Each structure stands twice: as C-alpha cells, then as structure tokens.
Image (cartoon, rainbow, N blue to C red; front, side):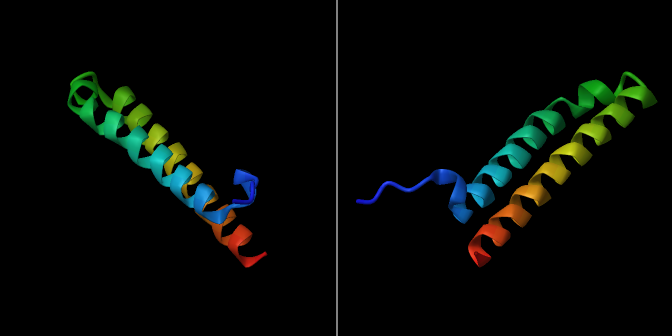
Length: 70
C-alpha cells in the first residue's frame, strides 16, 4: 500500500467539511431552544455561527472538487 498525503485526497476535504458542518450544527441546533429564550442577540449569534459553518462546508467542498480535477 502506498503512503499518500491525506491533504491532496479530495475525499478527505469532502468528508471533513461535512463532519465539521453537521457536527457543529448538531450542537448548535440542540441548544437553539435555550438560546431562543434569551432574546434577539442570541438568535443573531446562532445564525452567525451557522453561516460560518456553512462557509467552511462550501470551502471544503470546493477544495475537494478542485483537488479531484487536478
């Protein structure tokens, strides 16, 4: 079996972006009811974190497709 650098493997980028996105949102939405009761500031914070996780997810997917094309 050949040793391969995991960073150049496109499947690594796709899987890691999905793991970060879904695990982050799992905990975020589990505690959403607690944060909703605290006011609008908490809801804004909730959606900002969701947006950052979404950006990380799409960056990982983009890098994965870019690496697959090379």
